[in-house]
Length: 104
Image (cartoon, rainbow, N blue to C red; front, side, top):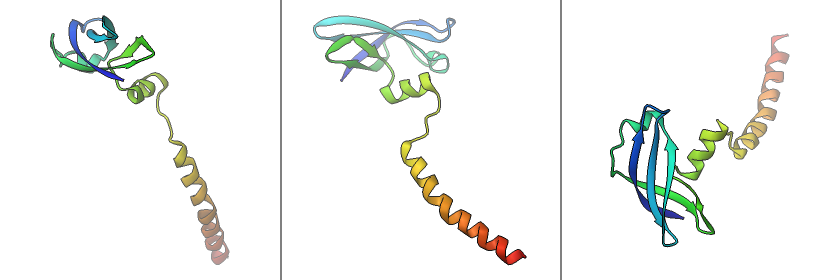
């Protein structure tokens, strides 16, 4: 679920950390995010989208879940890509075998 939040504190000299505030479940909540490149572009009061778990609003981020996963775990190869690579392997190996047979 998402909520409208706003930037309430900037600490760009501390690894680009900035703080946001939003309301969920009738309570005002606060969290932080690290974005060294984006911190300098932010200003106090800027609107941010906060993603939170409706069953547990204390779990929240100001970064889209997919981006947060990529930031924490690095590059992720989509599962469909493995099938495409596998499907290409057989025809390419056959083509290479045919070319090798002609060269002799």
